[in-house]
Length: 413
Ligand code: ADQ
Image (cartoon, rainbow, N blue to C red; front, side, top):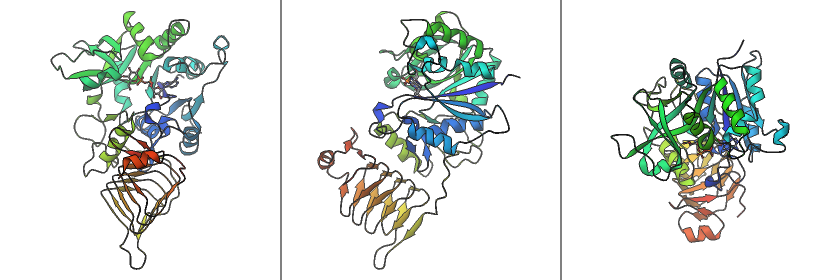
């Protein structure tokens, strides 16, 4: 019996604009929101949509991503079609390609056509692993089937000045795609809305047969860069394939009111920081607390977060912040911050508008603001970060255009 839909997650991009957070890890494994990694959101989208057969295609700096998925997303067993498995580039799996990595997003799927052939799904849902969003993929699948589409592309309106970073598309009144330009210099606005362009989210549902046909064709083309946006989609459109566009805003999330509007690329450190700061609002745009859309993550047996003080010092306290398990806030103060696992904030320390990854210790009287501290760093007493940006640069920290300071993983003072 063939399965209805096979999930494939593209997790092999370099994420170079997120440096130094991606210096040692692939973008999908960058930590986010005190206890998640970016890939968790798309994995939850699949599971919450009842899609349990998922391959994650990996490539660059995949070690922490591999460990995360293998250890914390173990799944399946009894049901043959229930699995989450990693697929690194195989090299020589297809003799004629030789020792190549995934040459582009389309090639990553092409190099795994044998998996599609094994499962014989009616449709293949190909999603990026880089974005933070909630999406009921079952609803998009129903739309795709109702329209008897060869390909359905999820789309979202963005301000016209941002549109050059995306695939920009045009639709007719039935939302059939009639135009597509990958990262155009002069994006075409939505008719009647000169400030907005409709862009591809890089999330596709293909009927299996046209997908295989297109990929086999593309693989043989010496002029192709083997990318969905640059090569496969424009060609499919010009050849008259039936391509529907799915309006992400109409995607219904159980337990969530109003249109679905949250989709973040977090492509740069500044975008990452801003998306993190949204989470600590009283009513954030992205709700982690909706019980009808559970967001599974790595589960550690962390002890509870604890807030204490030494004799004579002020008690440890946190305001408008997310604090993960295993933290000890021992006399320090935290404001508007996202604090991952097993951190220790000592007496008289002040952490403001900052993000601390796992296993960070902030020494007594240290002061941090607008700072991201990557994993496994011990900040000596009295250190100031985020106050004198020149001094921070001189210490080898990254300082972004918006003045956010990043202390790299395992930095030694
Ligand atoms: P880009 O933003 O350029 O455009 P791309 O670099 O192609 O995105 O990455 C898409 C996804 O594929 C990411 O999740 C990435 O990790 C992964 N990926 C990239 N190269 C890969 C490879 N060689 N092997 C495996 N995985 C790989 C795309 C579309 C646009 C669309 C935007 C939306 O081309 O049309 O608007 O995504 O963000």
